[in-house]
Length: 524
Image 1: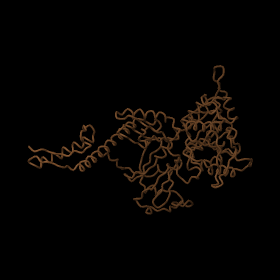
Image 2: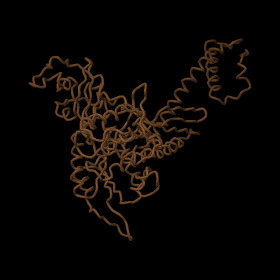
Image 3: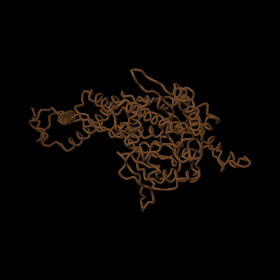
Image 4: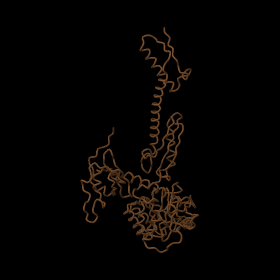
């Protein structure tokens, strides 16, 4: 009987086969010996075995197994996180794209990832963090979970040539009343500081040149605006972390100005200010629906509007004008604040100015949320003293109402951004432009050439005669858009390969000839 002599690597000698590496070496070694036995009719003496080849093969097997194991672990983590539903979007946080930088160390069972939310003021961010820890920790192989919370970089959702000062602002909120004396500035300032208290980066722009209120309602150390000598831009003043711009901080200027001059001042103050990155810019709109208001709405890509009113019938009539103005400009009104609606005394609630004005606005115009502010001496006193009520009494009833308003504004802005960003897109698999109607399940497709041929700009149609300058055959049937971006709440900007930038209103897209027989996506 012949003896089989083998040279075993030192790192395998006297070691039990307890690790996956040793098991792989043992399996490969057994296969080699088996092959040697099968190729010879008798036992052979092996003085040396090429263990370098064995190690290389084992390393390859181990790498493949490790890669497969990590992929399976990533799939487990994402499947667990997909149980968490965003209440605003109605979609799980994985589909929303919130999960970033997923890293897994399967050797010690450690999972690390980042949740990137749409805004740092997200009202459910603590719930997201808690749930993410819970569902991932529930996986049997997980020993430690590291969750980091962050927010998307501040950027406007709308396209277009925005002034430099507005290019790093995510959401612009107009607080409007169309009637003076209803507490609009009080609502604007307290809303801004509520959003700041929720973790957002916030600025306030006081657009009332004739009667600026901001210098009275806040108390910044520096009460004069400064100019950056290099960039020739305005440096805003600050109070409690909120950036402030008002004509009242510009020093002694003209007290009497005509409309065009006022519009120019507002434009300059708003667009040449170094706002930096802001999550929300709250604009305290001047009362009325004239040139100044229209200029603001046209220059600034407003995300949404908050309407302020009082219970009187006269206030409702003026507010209705403002709501119609925003409707025509395609700016959604997300909330109504009814100020000075009641007060409590002797255990009873009194309505000195009547009831129903705010509810009437909500019902008639379909505005989804109504908030009531009581008559409180402290609310007025805090504004006059330069310290907003939500800062002076953060746990009071008024602060709680503003907290609810802040949550509403954050959620509605997130929904608007989501709807706008997904309303029109290009589906390369279908080679068609997909249009999803907001607040509806309706969805349809358009041929890109049809959209391009229906351009109604002066470059395609003579604005005086109505003659069609762009001919049908000028546009190839296989044309594809290079980029589609929202432009305001009313249109998209489509960039074509020839460099042409087309503004296509949503109403126009809905009236175009649609593709009927669009193939369904493959399930394979």
